[in-house]
Length: 189
Image (tube, rainbow, N blue to C red):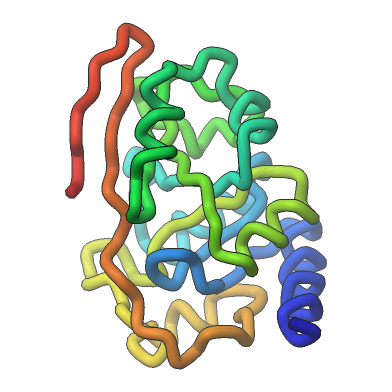
């Protein structure tokens, strides 16, 4: 755990200065930054060679953070999170208090509540949501392990978290879009 605490501190120090990190999530390795910092978000789009019209998701660690970003959260969102056995990303309407370049053209944002200890504790320290996008150049396959991440990505971030480098990732999260009028649409199973 001591190594983990040091890695949380190292990642936090980079993020609060507007840097981007490469880190293990509850699904795949991710590239992340402070979700309220538009310059840091732009660095990730540039590194991934990804159009800013392709939105990225953010990780959160609980209800308080969710209500800071969304004024109205449909009741079904809580039910889905309670019942989901696998990591699930929810796409919700009308986010606020995040970088504008994270919000999709339809005024939505994908979020996931994390349970993975490193991410959870980093979010606790940040007190802000953390961008999470797969550690690959846009259009290339999502790496299933640290050793599959391209050198271009590794060199392009400001810090690489030194944890779980041997872990083989599960599949990416399920994505479910919820509209404020209670429509539910599964985008990725």
